[in-house]
Image 1 (cartoon, rainbow, N blue to C red):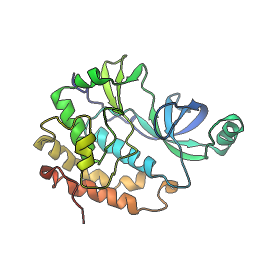
Image 2 (image 1 turned 120 degrees about the horizontal axis):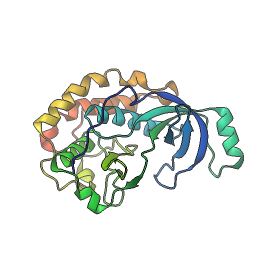
Image 3 (image 1 turned 45 degrees about the vertical axis):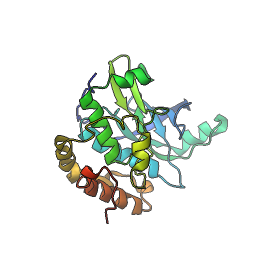
Image 4 (image 1 turned 180 degrees about the vertical axis):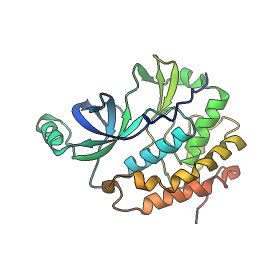
Length: 244
């Protein structure tokens, strides 16, 4: 089954305020909070941490360029958790929450994690899109054990989630050994390379979209953006060559 393209509407991203913390998710390495926001929607929120906001940064950049490529990534927001809301949660919550801006992925109703059969329903074109996108952002975290693909029973379509581990270092060997679609051919096409090149202008301004509290250090962001720019030219080699 093909991946239906999402529209690049104004509703895709933005900034909202969390108004209620429902619970901690049982899934995901970061155990995101499930929150309602003041736009009425429910989000899986990867919260701010003073120790570093790299997962939030790569989630934001990956979502922005993924949607530009027309991939089905749920609507996403920068979500502020106020001190009052965090303090109220911390009185009884089993996990302490820091106030600050997190990355929120909007809940997909009637969605389940894809099983092996549902992954096989991806059309060849859709599989090429997903594999090429993950290679571009250095995402090694789409494996048989952890596909990070949802199947919406309500919409009969796939969604891509959880790109917090994008920006992996190395030479790409782990990617080709572990990616759930690594055996798919072709893995990149001239049309996709052309689309990637068309997105490069977004990278020039994407740093300005990030909250100040995420960007106390910018070395990692500069490296990641430089990789995205350089790796398009390196695509035929199937490797993550240095961008220097």
